[in-house]
Image 1 (cartoon, rainbow, N blue to C red):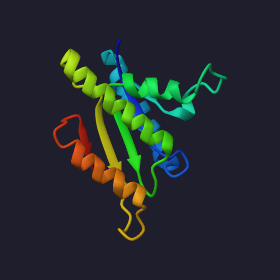
Image 2 (cartoon, one colour; image 1 turned 120 degrees about the vertical axis):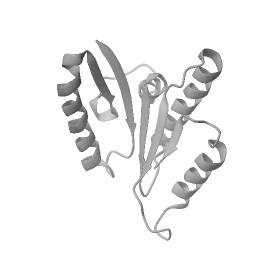
Image 3 (cartoon, helix red, strand yellow; image 1 turned 180 degrees about the vertical axis):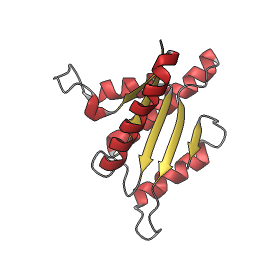
Length: 144
């Protein structure tokens, strides 16, 4: 069985519906692809163990972000501290993998649910500007 690991980063509250829909979509993909030997493993914080961990629990999420094949980030009116941390971990991992192993992994996709400019927080605007300026030469990142 070939596993394809997908990490989904976003505000849990703000994207509750979308996160559930993505989970359902991945399950439907698995119905099609598991008989062909391919399994899509979706990693979302709400599906991970809630057991007490040594150190920061966030480190477990960061590890999944670093080692996934695809990293998807959903943005709307805010970017949480931990969502941004997961993005930075995935990006750092991509840069290291590309430089040391010539691997394009994880591929990073950011999806922005539009708001009018006057309603978009400075935090979101600054994050998107930073991505546009610093990641133009990194083919792993796609912003939709």
